[in-house]
Length: 154
Image 1: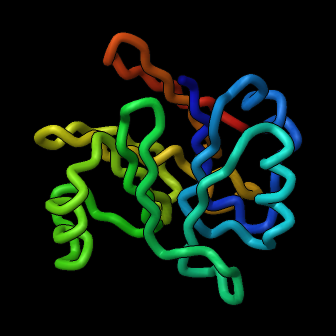
Image 2 (image 1 turned 180 degrees about the vertical axis):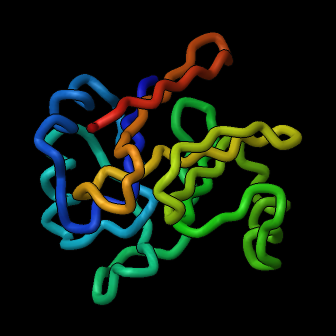
């Protein structure tokens, strides 16, 4: 199973992402999507699970999604502080026991294992701003071993 991981597109889909995600089985978007047409464009590659972000007014996406893909459980929520979850997210973590928590918002790539859960932020894929490196990521696993790769967009 191979995933394309993206966040904080802010209504801009870099055309290179379509090539970078070619061959993925599923795409996860951690919010601040922009227009729903961006999700439709990503769906031309693979099925998409997306959540709303703090700038996604009017989009009919959920704030949190939980999806199990090939035996791995993902909890996706836009704003997460690893190790210091809000009471609501902490409750979902206890209930769902995800293998991976995917989030966005900070615009910074991040991966840290905390207990049995990998907290993962693919970075931001929108237009250049804040002098931060833009990125997406891929994640795959076989025989239970999970690996990921950050892919720079600059």
